[in-house]
Length: 277
Image (cartoon, rainbow, N blue to C red; front, side):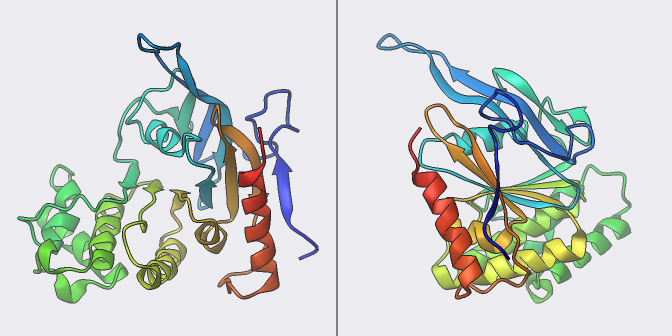
């Protein structure tokens, strides 16, 4: 690696939130096109512009992480991408179709596990398949496939209360993948586990990603996590939330945190996060 690669989001055109280069929105797995969000003011103040002209694309099968300072709107942007919050302006495209609400074409994983405590592991994983057109045998086979993928086959009849935090998150990931979405959206999914478990889950997620070829958009506040996982890191600025720069992580996987190249990327991303307006 000759140095840290980055694409200045402001170079593509005169809009500070736009990323240059391919893929174009219509060709990408997911594309955010000029997304903005304004919250109306209350009696004590005017409207608040939380996001402004955020544009970037994630190619089919790509792993992209989203980082930024506190208050930059990462979670708001995530919810807009997932169809859970409406943008004030702009649009989100999934495989060329505008996202207007939640869809089974997206699998969503949050920091909280959101497992049903009265269902077994297998029943939680298969919950999203209940309304599918798969036969009972096909649903059962899909659940078995997902449990094997995340290494939880022997826990299929266990209940969530008996699982560790890391195991619960693996169940949540398996449930999201069971419906075979084209995009996996993840918002701080490992934020509630200890550091050792977090690194284990990162390795396991990369294995799952490599075996499924899913497109992943992953929100995190942990820069080292982003550099460990991502093909590209989208670095946001705050007030209002916008794309500051997109950094291409040109380090072969698996990545070692002790390597000089890894440390260089971590330092670069942290520098961008800490930069002023």
